[in-house]
Image (cartoon, rainbow, N blue to C red; front, side):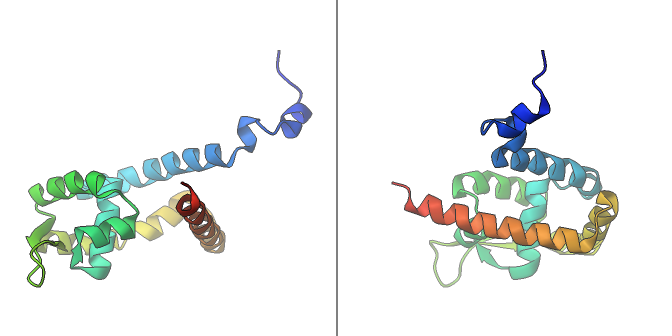
Length: 156
């Protein structure tokens, strides 16, 4: 038998009230939204994030890219190897410090940028949300990430 709606509103453990649930569903929804836009470019969503970073700030060390994307280097390294095999980027030892691995987009990776410039507008169109709403959501999520990272740093 279904619970009355008021019971859910009063229950602190109701699934619909959980920030973690909303974030997980939103993350899956965002990846699904981007998938048909990225597939023709041969990119997955994580690869798209790497390329966005490199188009903005290349060259980057693997460590710097890992920090920027907030990904563990162990997760990022196989992704970068696959992208290099696809011809999207170049990994090379840093000329100043041989211990560092530098990452830059290849010519093919740089050429993808023109096609990628259409993606933000397509996402806004598909969502049908006002640009101001999306900017506010971005701001709120950025504040959330900062607060969550601060809590994580304080954990033993």
